[in-house]
Image 1 (cartoon, one colour):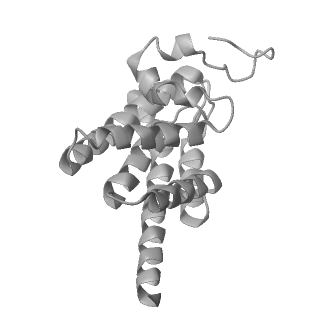
Image 2 (image 1 turned 120 degrees about the horizontal axis):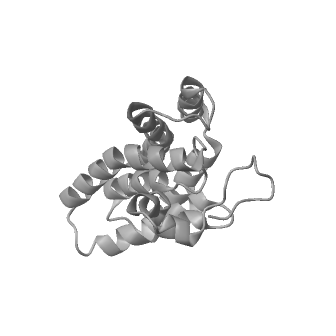
Length: 191
């Protein structure tokens, strides 16, 4: 793993480091989280592409099982990889964006490309800016955990940290779906 010149800074994971363990590969969205800027956007784009490909092979019910399992497994994966990095919510960990955006897509599909783009833009807006309740959720988990990033964590703390990483993205998915529903109701009302 490469490190920055300052020894107290957060290490920068390399492609080799990420693919050394399956948990890291998943946490980093099969490498999309290694994007040099906007890794959350890169992870969401990867999720979108993977979902569109997976639609040809998987039913909605199968997608729901994958998403549910991905959320549960993601609590451990995101928490464990953040523990390895010594950082509570490292930006390159994008599994949270992946499963949350899959959740958005499973509810809106089939949808035309315009609605898919709207869903992508809304999800990125809610996830990046964390307005209102989303920011409160994010701050709650960062505040509750407290402590030193470098101190070792118990398995319960690791899972809880992972849940905190995923929770704000699930809230962003909820507000994305709510906004799309309101837009569609509004458009139906005015037509």
